Image (tube, one colour):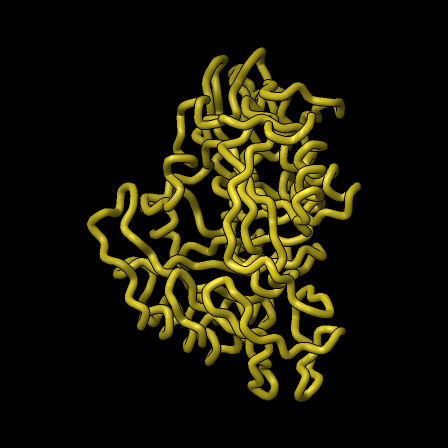
Length: 370
């Protein structure tokens, strides 16, 4: 591992990467993700934002973003982490996977630096989050693993102001890099895109095992609160067998308390030939997960108050009612227990729910004082 020196960064700067090494043939290997891109001078990795310059790996998008927006935390989605509170969301450009169904392909597959229209230092992001009343900052839209150095610096600045950091990630990261990355995160939502190597290889251009390794690592080696999302695509990853295998593996290896969001696919990018996911498929997935011991299973991208609400796994009481991103019921005690039977609810909760609701507030950081 090559370590970049810690110093104040210039906005839009090209900065040294943390994880890489020189190969015997003179190429430089990036060690941030399991793609292990091996680059000649001037080449970029598949993510596009990590490049070989002057015989080292550089991050080319430090301090630049594709946009900022204040969202409800439930949109990440996180249902068990400070419910009802606002989160300042931002991303950069590029991605280290090549999912044919990507819903953010205009950002994740961008090859245009103009996509990165807004600039901000880590300190400014943290300060603006505080000014806007956000309890957390989310690294999202594209995978924050590929802008690790920037994400870590933002997270450090946020911690100084008691702002939490949330990673929305595919979990496709190496053992070396994930320790540093998640050491600075407070919560995460991890995409478990499917449960077959064939799907990961043919549809996403990656591999399944590194993602499973990340999930196990998060559960057993960190204090990061995390939830799982699986986008169900008709005929691709929605069979009863795959759902049975996947949910059984999760309960066995990371336990029953990790919330799971089964979300609806809509045709996009290179999968325009597929139909929307029927709501019945999400309900079936949720039922299989609950049957196999997942205590908190949700449906997403559809209007389903039952599938979007949180229930006590012990007595069945509706603890948090949700209508899309609006909280409609709150039956938790001040210390996060079921108000009926006193069973603790897994997650991070406050005495009452936040009141942000379903609002979406686009933000231009250049409108705030430097």
